[in-house]
Length: 137
Ligand SMILES: [Zn+2]
Image (tube, rainbow, N blue to C red):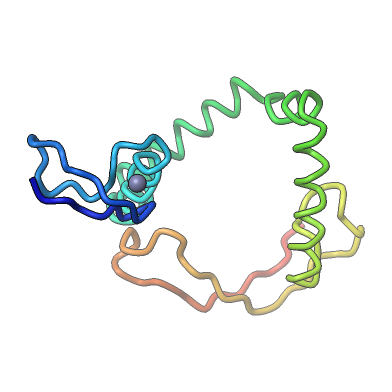
């Protein structure tokens, strides 16, 4: 039986006889890596799948609105580490991520913005547009 090298961990493995072209070994983290890549690709290439996932996630968030607050309360080490990492990301990008706690109260600026599609291929092949956003109150 030929040995293969796992795409995720790089270690040699013997593929299952049912799947001779197997690219990932059977370790859980390697299988999770394979599944994650499949899901990213599927989201980018299948608009129906992308929309179904978005709807399912929105539904889950509505049903579990307090999940992350409870998670942070019960995992203080995670919350502290995440806060530190977010500070680094904010410093790198030059400004904090937008949320209600960081609002300065300044009026949004009208102007010309560039929108880049997150899910290309789903809008008639266009990946970006130049649009004008005006403040409407
Ligand atoms: Zn592996």
